[in-house]
Length: 63
Image 1 (cartoon, helix red, strand yellow):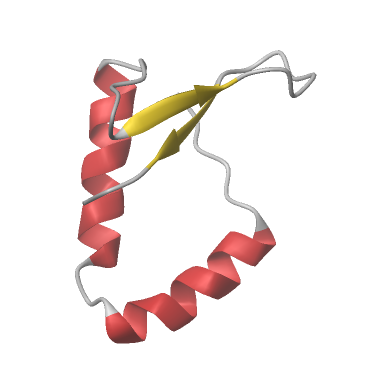
Image 2: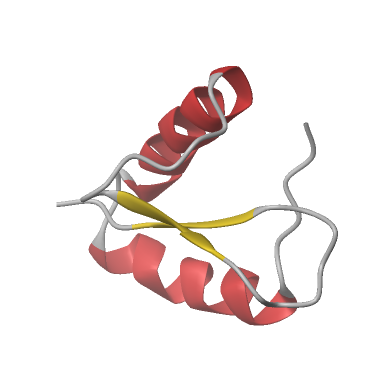
């Protein structure tokens, strides 16, 4: 499974890492979970449909 990041995301991530120091570790955990079971898990993640893409897009909210 490949994870693509937009340039805007990388820029925002860099600034957010100053405030949330464990953010990279949290993202690694999310990637591991999605790599093993790429399904949505409400209320924490939702599938985004009707984007005109062949791939699946899942939005993740961490509490």
